[in-house]
Length: 439
Image (cartoon, rainbow, N blue to C red):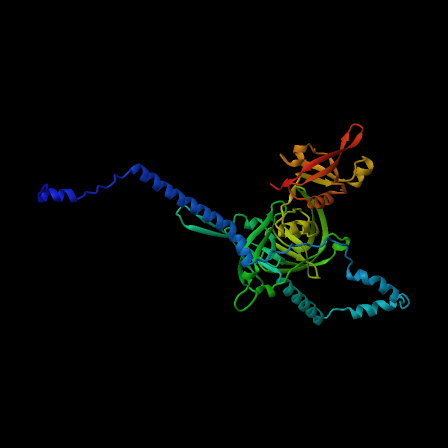
């Protein structure tokens, strides 16, 4: 039997385990694959969260949608004194005596005493205080960095008026220019309480804007400012009896903040034509200046005009002038609902009766200018054409054209009917034009 020495026996039973050599290439590939899978999983998780989070949030915390703001179309309104005139004439028909007998008694009854004036102005003061509840001071705060890397703040103030509560926000109508490029918008209400607002929408053509403050931001632990303010009602500025109407101007009508002036509408200025719009301007006997700003109300609590400095004339350069509210209602409605305003790109004027009778010019909106690169120019509309219909609805003048165009939205195709002069007279031409958004 073979004999093994001790060393040989140990060498026989001891096994040496060698480690497998590391494949660095495969390890790197697996590491990169794992990292890529982790990134992909993270992206999928993020994408899924972004897509589902709004849906889940709406299901768990449903948010109230803002109500659509609608302003009723103008109707011819009869002044209270006109409504009573017929019945008064009928009642007094049999009781009238000679003027000589009635006049002294009527004058004696209507003589104003000091007490009468005090009562009248006390009543007007109460009325103005109620109007102030719908007025808002609007400040655009602009920040800039100077050469020394210091922040410079500038403020531009204008006035606004509360026009609607859409169940989510309080909407304020104001001027756009002081707010253009503002970093922050501050509102100061009638009781000096301040809130921060957001620019909701604006229209560069009319220069108007809507700023909004959320209803939840109007509340504090102690009170709800929404219950203290008032929403202004939009009146009518297109009636024949508008001239001579008593009015109240609130804002900076004299160039000083928070001022009040009483007066009346004295005349209507020729309509000012802007791109696709026509606005009536009214002149008052209230003295103003270049910095006049604010709103004009009648004595029935209705907003009837927006003070503007767009009119200049030697005969009334110091008189406050206003945009009539009637032609602005549709624009304000669209701004309140953040609806884009359609753009055709023409400036128009009315065809006078003399031109119609003597030169046989058709009634309609006479085109006096066509904007460069506008839908109107691209499709071939020209200066001298007369717009007579939009989508089959007759256009009688520039105000009619403006109001009808505002019913459409950018992207809609409309049929524009025009009359164009030729050697044999005016001939009818039809255009099918796709409207765009105001540039």
